[in-house]
Image (cartoon, rainbow, N blue to C red; front, side):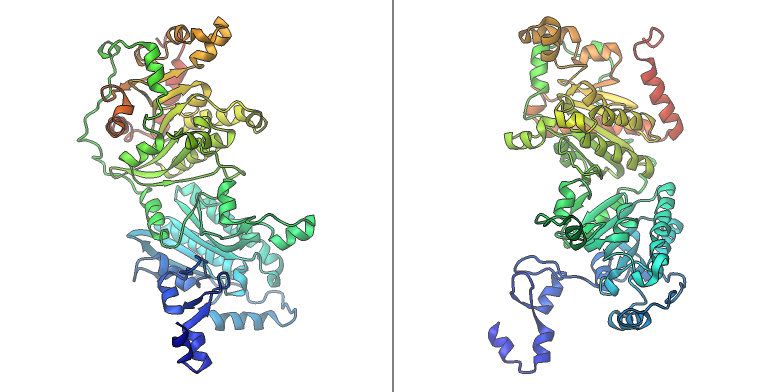
Length: 560
């Protein structure tokens, strides 16, 4: 490598072909760097891309069709600082070849049609002025007219000061355009690149249904220097980075550049309508008559429901869903790992999967709090429920929890209200909802995900107002009476079917789901497919009304 450089005496040639990475100081061959989407092949640093380079990375070759935004005012204030604003604009246009900081294009991502608005930090720091706001709004209006998802790629230092309040109100203008896409039920996605601050972060960037960030990308309202000057404290390392945002539930995921086209295509595909004849070839395994169920020892059933090798929600996602994209965070400061969810495709039908996640190994069980969600978990679930309702996507919930987390922090953060909100949102969704209790169905923490049009229970699962141990401790005043309490509570499949609490029982492989997790998963898959097949043709308002009426009947003499 050294010989190659010294053999090229003109300094210009060296500068063209080689550059130094600012992080690791490695000498990088420019063509190799560009082939790798401008990610340092020594340390992984992400170099900035121009808007044109970003379109080339994300869109299928030859699919880009540029959309021209409307004309906007030019230098509305006649602004001059160290030099006239008009001169700054001219320099930025000459350097980038673009009219302003945002390019808009129609195109496809691995065959999925999208409209894309890409910000270029090289144009006056990607600042949001009238032309940039008009471009983002035009992109939203084009997506609305074409009935396709909108992808926003953000890179901005904030509002363009040289345009004064006209720049500020672009935040409202673009936010209104995003609201129209919400009302139309169209998917919106933001790809956060470094940096995304100020008016862009506080408007369209964070209003998307799904927010993906590149590794290391920073996003926030105030920049780090402003924050440090205001509070006179040094910020922690990694503050406002993509990884920090993911940990605090403010973005859905962090993905590398090589993955982005695949992730974006999966998200866009998960909003396409399924075939009208979807699921007609599947056989329903669900048992709906309690007389057809074998008598089981209740104590053994409780043990099997809690077996650590039973398939989890993520196991089910791997077994019978395609293109599952997990979505993280409650968008309010936390991400609870005890609830997982995301968009996926079930044999060609888009679905939203939401479920409790325990795990198998001890370290994962501890990290996921043994499947006991915090309020952030239920807020995340409610967010995904609303997204499914907006997109018209059926919801599948998988329940397996001892109960909601009962700790001090959970109470302080509003556990009761978070569960109540899930009950309200799920009960009123105008899309099909199928709920399956796959392990433990413990108390309100389970019910929060179990307000379904059809509520099914796996053969060796349980569903109860309280754990048998808790009931025994309170009413028998003896934890050793847990078996007697389980019988009295009638937590097993046969009892629950006789009571009418569940609509059917999903058989398990001989010996229990833990003996054959993949086989158990496929039985759940067949049950879900057949339930959705029956529900998906119904009117949305009728679905919600029937679901509410179903729960209205519970406990009444006329509803028995």
